[in-house]
Length: 352
Image (tube, rainbow, N blue to C red; front, side, top):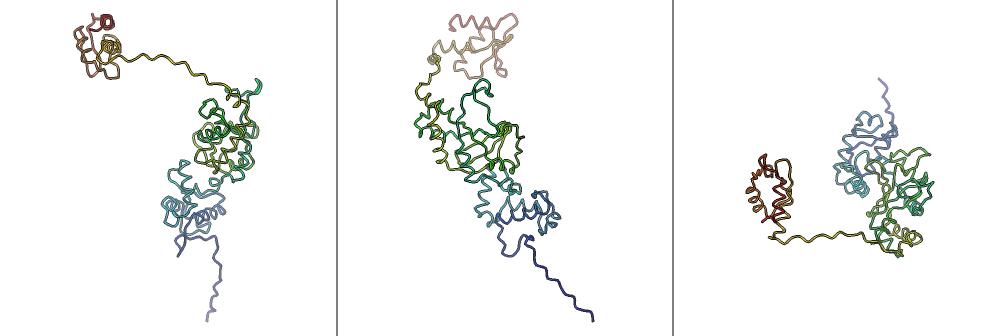
């Protein structure tokens, strides 16, 4: 009698994450977990091109990249109800990922953002640029060059307006608004780490960060790292509008240039006198519209805009030998007739 084979008991690995299990709730953390298991095995984050064999090698059954992409883009009710999924989808769409949540969006490098304390540290370094000497000016504005770890922080206009008003300045003065809308911050180690992890390659240590990137504080409370020379950017975290406005107001209140601007008046640009339009039906109106025709070779070309006195102008020009060509929007004359002279004569005679 053959000895009975003993079946070795092997515990199910926590790395095996088969989709579609009984009672499984596939929230965002579930899909992130699959990505982490894949990355632990292959040393890279999965993409839509990841094959079933690659997932099987990572001990994840019955799945491939395309299937995961479909489930993320067209979520089941449990996934769609997940607040983390909703927040990531909103952010992905705002960042220009038209498909919404994708495997790329689950990549930790994309999901890495500044902590609340990191944003507070960044805003604590806010300063207005000062005028520079001739040997330190780098920009046509007369402002000094950025330090190696300094970045421009663009402020949403609404935020700047509220902060200027809180500091006692006139936010309707364009000089003050221009002064307060762009400030500088010091890039902390956390921000540099975020820039690295989200896949934006930082320049060498001897090259200024400001030559490549800037920060954008939007009126929706989103902080974004943007490229200087390319379109687009990456989400870097959220901030409280009230806290940023209060910080800016304290910076504005101590700025000597804003204080100096407050004591001066804006010089209004010289305005040119605009002549009154001629009265409808008047001889002046007819002469003005007739003068809008342009001589070109043996023709007088009509202007782009419609002429209310066209019927009268047509009769006058046809009487002077012009042949109206509606398809070309012009009057043609014989070779022995000078269209410019005809037009000048009619204008001189008062265009009766």
